Length: 266
Image 1 (spheres, one colour):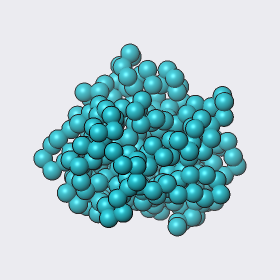
Image 2 (cartoon, helix red, strand yellow; image 1 turned 90 degrees about the horizontal axis):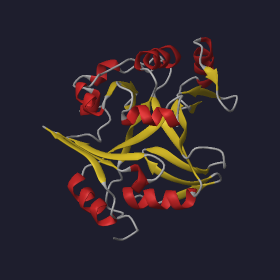
Image 3 (tube, one colour; image 1 turned 135 degrees about the horizontal axis):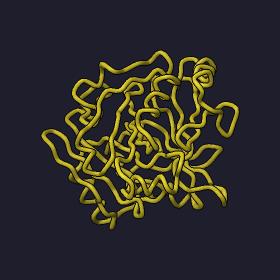
Image 4 (cartoon, one colour; image 1 turned 90 degrees about the vertical axis):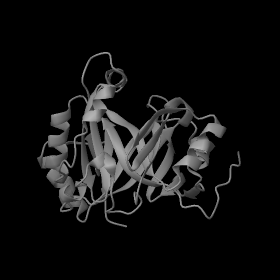
């Protein structure tokens, strides 16, 4: 399987970040109070994985909160390791899912979940094969159109868009003991060239994915989520007034085991 991405293919677009949280409704209330977000959809089918969920648009991106329904489930075991929660899944929309599935098979990357419903299909990859977190490719007719159909967010998700405070998912930072190797691996999975800035390697999937070195005592995985905000300082102040604690740096917020950073629109 060639390592170099094909230049004529459109890269997948990172649309959607899934968070595992200890309790669903307090997490939803926190995101509403901090960032003015609203729930677009709650999907009954996720009960097959012993979780409940709520999908909230961030402009034309999505934050999805999931919480375990029973002790002993995979979600509950995740929270045993990450008691405050965490980001466990990055979801990318693409136009050529059958070809990408064949490529994953050729790379030896296991698909742990594959859902097919009318007009929608997804592939979730095993985190031991991707490294750091689960990755998903999905496809919906016009799923790369920013305001087009997006089945995981429900049939009328556009009505729940609120952009007074935040209006997009700008970047995520993934920390690893071997960030260069992980970036190259994700570049092969997504068929996207790895580029660099002063901080290190990154992938441009509509939303930027940065790769940084994890400290020895730090868990590997998604560590920072950047949200686009027209007025970052005012939004930060709003979140602090709502009771959100400061993060590891003065310009971040501590939410669900992650640092959330507010940045001006690109």
